[in-house]
Amino acid sequence: MVEAPFTEYFIQGITHDGKKFRPSDWSERLAGVMARYGPGVRGPNARLQYSRYVRPTLLGDLKCVILDSRLRELEPMAFDFVMNFAKDNNLVVTEACELPEDYGAMKRGR
Image (cartoon, rainbow, N blue to C red; front, side, top):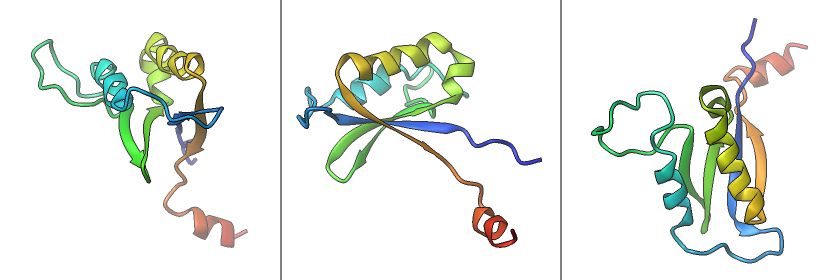
């Protein structure tokens, strides 16, 4: 049985009104706050690194944060915090999922 792919939410640095979200380092700040949530995080003196579940990225010249749905299972309140941040700031959120590597072959075999 194929395991269901997880969902990723792309929180874009643009509001529903089409305005660029400020401050310009918002994605790094948000991901930095969430750095302690995710696999491989150890102790209060661990080297600071972004969580695999909340990470900043650029799509073209647009700053974004990618939120992994697996954070909901690990820490529901942290997941809600990030989603509420996007909602409270009127940011565009796009939902996506990763397709299995053999997706194309599975589709042709039908």
